[in-house]
Length: 128
Image (cartoon, rainbow, N blue to C red; front, side):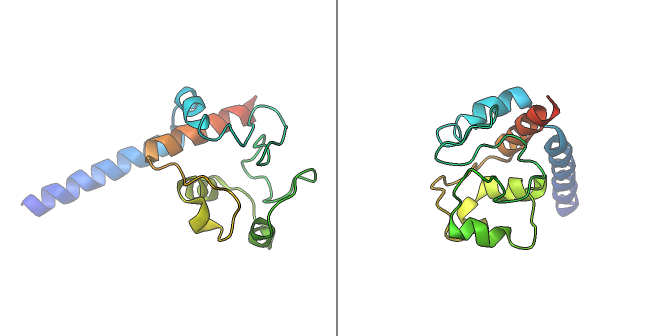
């Protein structure tokens, strides 16, 4: 009986987090983005140490003409890959695991809620 209750609780948690993952909180995401803002801009197409993230969702990877991408990022982009929401989520969690040799020093966003909120923030900018 205990195993069934644990399985049911796990299922309910998974369902609630997947629903949240579709939404997130864009306002909370602005706070999460502060971790990224030293190197990236999201509200204006201005490159910093890293490329700007304006319109990043579904943008082809390594596609900004006025930014010098690393060899690792250019290689990762082969095959016309785009920054889908799923890929962005994975990248935000562990950039170096997704793209071996990336110059990005950031270790990643560890809390799933923060990733959800960050995605909501980026989606909100795309809607403007």
